[in-house]
Image (cartoon, rainbow, N blue to C red; front, side, top):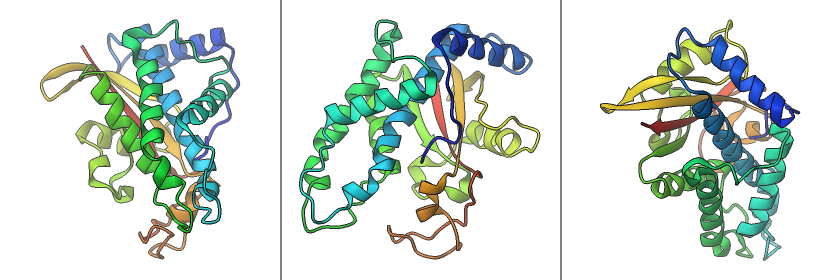
Amino acid sequence: MKYSISVSLTHNFYYLLCLAILASTVSTNIQASEEEVMVSGELTTLFRSARKVISVNQALINDAEKGDKGLSGTVVIEKAKENYQAAAGNELDLNQDKNGAKQAMLDAVNEVMTESQDWINEKGVGFKGFLPAIFARQVAEKFSHKMEGKLKIKLTAPKNYVRNRANRPDKWEHQVIEKKFRSTDYEKGKPFFEKASVKGKSAFRYILPEYYSESCLGCHGEPKGEKDITGGKKEGGKLGELGGAISLIIYE
């Protein structure tokens, strides 16, 4: 999935934007700290930036004639950093990395790509099944494991668009998606965050909406019900329509 919004921000402006979001949601997001908002924004942007590399390279990955696709962990990380800079307006700063979360995300990306080399480089096989959603789920699992339960990230979607049950939204995510992101009054692309209990534990929750772009519609577009390249049925999604969300939990 490509970015639905083109963002060009300097580091300072990106910081002020987060503060503005914090201020605009203060009535529903009591006690959310500036640091939590910044960390969440950086991690969800980095997660999305890495997945974009897989999305834009689907034709290459599924090329049955080509062996080595040149998508090593190192290459994907460098491209992800480029995507991150284009989105955030500043380079990824690993010197400011609370709990080593950004480095853990990069390490997770590297591990997934390293473990998948034989799979994506196999000649004579067209569709590999190495989809952006598969990549994202594997990275999310490895990242959450590395953070030892302190932080968790997840790719989810409206219930009627979820194909893998492991990605189904929980009650909080479902409520935000249906009551806020799908509301005509909600600002498109704006993340939502608040303090919320997760299985009895105090946590900061942050969720970033995502919208269908042209690259998504090959599998998720129209006509609804038609089989896509994966063998699944297309959801009938339309360009610019809410198609998913990246959800992050920071336990306190």
